[in-house]
Image (cartoon, rainbow, N blue to C red; front, side, top):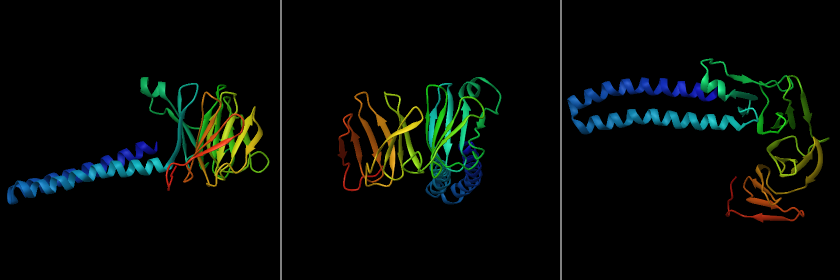
Length: 239
């Protein structure tokens, strides 16, 4: 939805400017020759490119998480727009334009600040949010579950989610800690995993290791025996 709005805006601005630039280019070619006309044409054409890139970056800043669930729906989590889903089959093979729907999360989906998404094999959608902990939207309408700080989580800002090979959910947060959740219940917290303020990404591998990417503190590897390894990516490691 955000992309559609920005696409329309870029098209409107770009075509409007291009039309005016074409008139000025023709006038410049008639009065000043090819060199003058080329300069005006180049300036006019760059407006469209800058609009597309600029609005695309703005849209990327608004959208924090995109994934696909077991039913083939595209799930989009945004900063203030909550969670929305797109039925890819309907979008590809149907003329129905109303295929992009918003999901209700505790009645506040319109402004839930989504930071991460992790669908499970049962069709439930786990949602990490900024300031509201971990939410689960069940595969049946109206089934909502919430895990909050400090009773269930080590931080109210869940910035990254992933499932490991043991069926455990790994929840990284804004405090640099990693909560390990099994069957919907917190089982362990990796205290002070990083001096950073945020774990930006989590990736379990087939060997049982957990890789955690952080903001400005490089990469961490947690081995199955609990040992940790810090991998620096440079003097000023960014996420």
